[in-house]
Image (cartoon, rainbow, N blue to C red; front, side, top):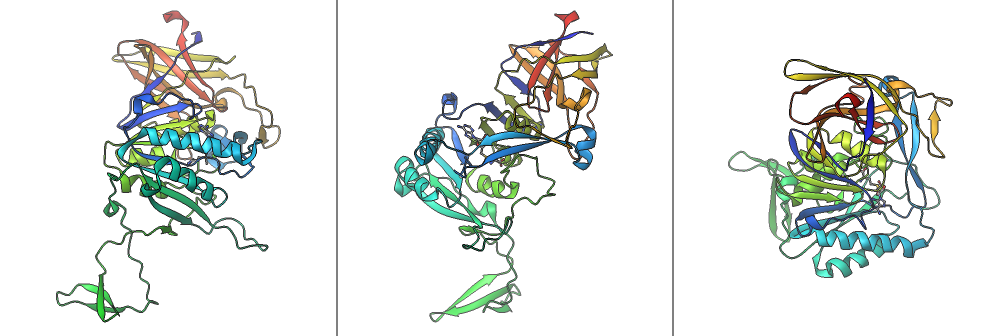
Length: 421
Ligand SMILES: C[S@@+](CC[C@H](N)C(=O)[O-])C[C@H]1O[C@@H](n2cnc3c(N)ncnc32)[C@H](O)[C@@H]1O
């Protein structure tokens, strides 16, 4: 059966959980007017002005996904600004203005930076969000990374928390943490008249009592969330990926189920995953095609709309489609990806050849309907499922059957069988 590529503007994935929209593009210029004033939480984790280039490590084939021994290292995004600080701050200003316009009156902004630009960012936020809407400067302290000898090691990021207005919705009770059993402090451990375990301390002639079974809420120094370790199962291969625990705290404290969380520099999509886990809808934007393919894979169980045109590539697809009773069986036989590796691509091991189905990272089957491609069944390589399912069963529904493929370079192509065209 001959398959040919067709154009398409968007993909709708039929998922089981609350979902959202993913857009590949420049957040400064992408049209988000439909979301104006409707977003409850904007998380922004933009470039930090490090001067570095960041990569995406794409595992290749079943072997690569099983033991990490076959990879492509691809450029993901650049954090260099030839125009210097002025150019960087102009990006930040545009992102903050966009965030401000998106937020509802009860909404919250979390701007994640490090010590390089946080002072400048604070002044920008004061201008755009107004000084009296500043809520917290959160210090995310961690231990990972090397140790410096010429200065104190830099072991924290700064997260600036601003409200859109005085109507901010914030519920700290949703982010309670376990009480630390700090026996070295000066509190007296005891039980009260009802037998409840507590600690007491006397200060200024007054006795303060803290019950062991009462929730404890984080303060503005977050030292209880560690960076992702090298072997962390959450790791997607996208540099600068943040831990889910950090984003869960941010999303939970300022949203209710059904709210919209936006991340305008979504990278691997951690904030979007946190939104979905907390029954919120999401809006993710990123410039990098690798970011979009990682996000798509992480969010495949949500009702997802990828609002980005499909690519056209020189690839060729071989697949069979057999109608059964109540479903179609679509079997992937071969894929000639004709990959065009961008300059600077690293092959691990050197000379790695990528042929056939190894060039596929994700594929799905669905229908063309009302001008969109609707995905019903998918298979994607993951650490837990390194092999691609080569046979997918599609329910017999109205519409033209189509196949979508995301290759290891992040190209998304859409295919229809010629006999049906
Ligand atoms: C620090 S990373 C985000 C990491 C993300 N929080 C995560 O957990 O994976 C910054 C991201 O900003 C994106 N980016 C940079 N400039 C952008 C722009 N103008 N519009 C949209 N995304 C942009 C980069 O492609 C990169 O993925």
